[in-house]
Length: 198
Image (tube, rainbow, N blue to C red; front, top):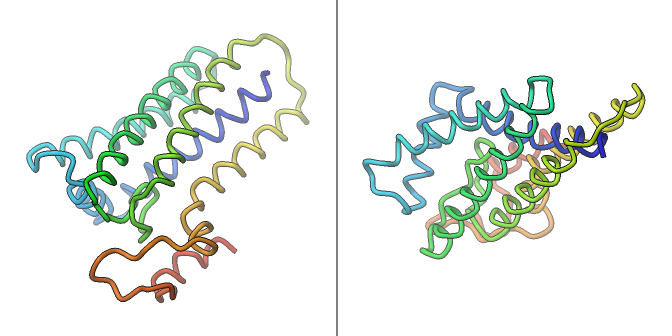
């Protein structure tokens, strides 16, 4: 159980770290995220920027808690992560129900429109975070080899989550946003987005 808790800690922590960094890494990143939240049409204009700032702050706090050694910090971080992920899932579900076709900015510059896959992804991650929280109460000692395997598995799964949109678009392309000339062909921008995966 300790290895499972460690793996899920690195999975969730890795996902939130990438999500946070892609929203603050460039001068325009946060503004693009704010614009995407506005495009979801689930909040009044006056609340968009404060809510976007709260999302970024909560992602940073979760990363901090999951980076701090200790069972208590990990437990709090995973429970907060689960709550945040369920909130994201509800927000995305509301946006999809309203017909919003805003690109998902969860991990930066993706052009994949919000859809049911993003709701499923967030709910699944929330369930894994809660499983990690339940597993982190176990006692015992961990070997160096087992710790390394759990760490590597967690980071690999985090990478797969972060890369899920471009990977899924290769096999099941999402419909292009209205007004785009994308069709089923990958645009030059899309190719650039997926090139880092391989």
